[in-house]
Length: 140
Image (cartoon, rainbow, N blue to C red; front, side, top):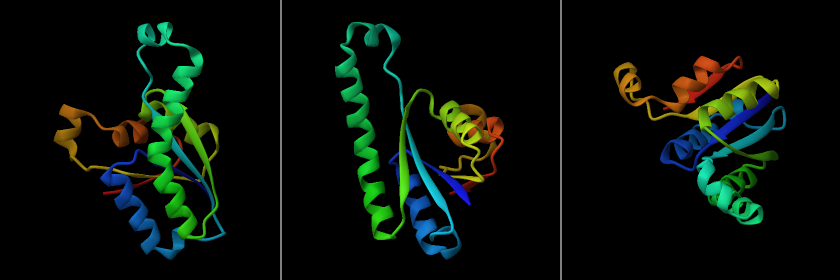
């Protein structure tokens, strides 16, 4: 199975990884893993005055803060994964990546506000599910 794992470095990502580690059916060589992290874009006016190398270094540094522990986790589990860093709005980028990459499953952590909380606050997970053609496994 081709699995996209969306991570943001939060406690919800850690909970999702713990879930994966506790369920053998999600681990193993039968699956191809791609881990995606979306770094929020620097506002266009600020990005316009920054050197492209500085901006790229910023995005790379921010992504590495999140991905380093994920790489360690995958290594400890004996899993090989491809790591993607994207820039933009998390929900849009994750949904587009899952669809474009023709993944069989998208796994991500979620805070789990519930319906009322999502109406008021919005939710990356809710938006991903609304725009994604790929089945989504939410871990709360």
